[in-house]
Amino acid sequence: ERAGLKHGMQVLDVGFGTGLVAAQAIKLTGDASRVVGVDPSPGMMQASPLAATVKLLEGKAEALPVADATQDFVSMGYALRHVSDVEAAFREYFRVLRPGGRVCVLEITPAEGRLANAALKFYMRSVVPVASRLRGVKTNTPKIWRYYWDSIEACAPPAQILATLRSVGFADVARHTELGIFSAYTATKPAA
Image (cartoon, rainbow, N blue to C red; front, side, top):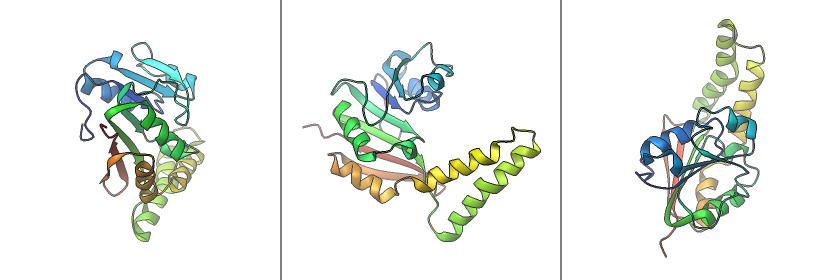
């Protein structure tokens, strides 16, 4: 909502996964037929409770299977760290957006400051896996959380993400953070 998603907009949710971000987009647009999900994993998309109500397309952020200037809003929730070429992905977002269209990329970023980052890393790589094991969750949980943290650390830093959005032509580029680690990158395709 803060990024400008409104009732009636056409939305492309890149990195659809199981549809968590798309579900929120449906609430804001008021119409599931206005939301299209793209993900490289057909199995992941089919596991979504939205699979029967949202149009789903197999594809990657770097080569979207969508026509030029057909979307009002492009969203990506917590998947940027899995994109191999961020610039190519942002060029694709720019290509598929109509003039005046908006993009919102949500991502978890390392905390600013060495102490805060070390505490977050310890929490995600040690505390969460141990707590999960104590609750009887699968034994591969520590490995998954290690990978999760490693992918967060390997993601392009915020300054680079903002610069890349600008370099492909976006305007009004901004980053909003919550709790120092949840980033929302927003930008607009110029109207003319």
